[in-house]
Image (tube, rainbow, N blue to C red; front, side):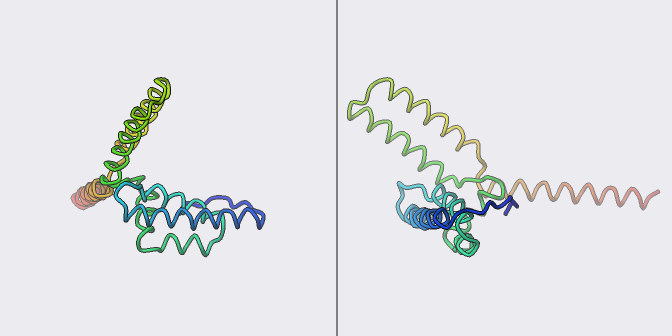
Length: 157
């Protein structure tokens, strides 16, 4: 968890954030069960809202066995699972099709197509957790090899 300056919120604001955190956490769990609903986005939103409501709720959400790993993946490497990427992009296409089917104006269709394309590009630019872990392992192995080479060359001198 990154350290940020905590601003003291009013009791009413903390209650609103608590309800938002619980709502988003519930939607994240539903998103894990339903194939057409993105759970990761709601898990991240739940962590955001919980961090503003109370430390206890924040820890409870982050330690949840279903939601916690999604939050951890996002905070440590900004990774998004491939299945979440595929589902999100498929939903973009389905949404665009439904807009067209129900006769949305052309300007709205073009605007949404541009927005969905930008969002899909962002999603695809994020590494998957497995690829990120493999990259981190490779970098650690290279650093270890470089360290061993330096130690060997200092012993030779």
